[in-house]
Amino acid sequence: MGKTLMKLPMFAESINKCHQMLKPKGVDLCRILTSNDQKILNNILNSFVGIAAVQVILNSVSLKVLSWIWSMDCPVRKVFFKIRWTTQILSVGTPVEFV
Image 1 (cartoon, one colour):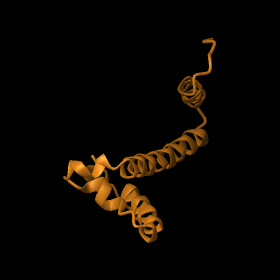
Image 2 (image 1 turned 120 degrees about the vertical axis):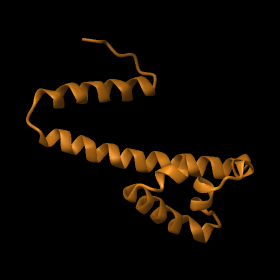
Image 3 (image 1 turned 90 degrees about the horizontal axis):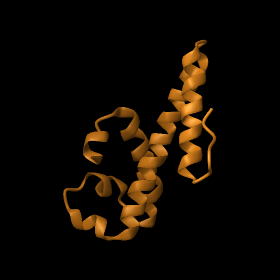
Image 4 (image 1 turned 180 degrees about the vertical axis):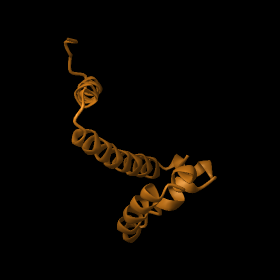
């Protein structure tokens, strides 16, 4: 999946920034995300770093989408934010009243 996502310029740029930050610590983020070697993920640090990097980037993209929707003056914005808010609340296990 990492190889495919690296084809997206925004994703690749963000991964490369994270890679440069982690490189002095001996972590090769690009290798973690693009390697065909399944054993690389047997190291729990590699797994966590790879997951965290992808989450950070996807959240960044999500925020850009949210800001674009917010700039639109239409009812879709309100519905989208209600759905997004509900999803986030459910993900942390907080009970939600559906209205």
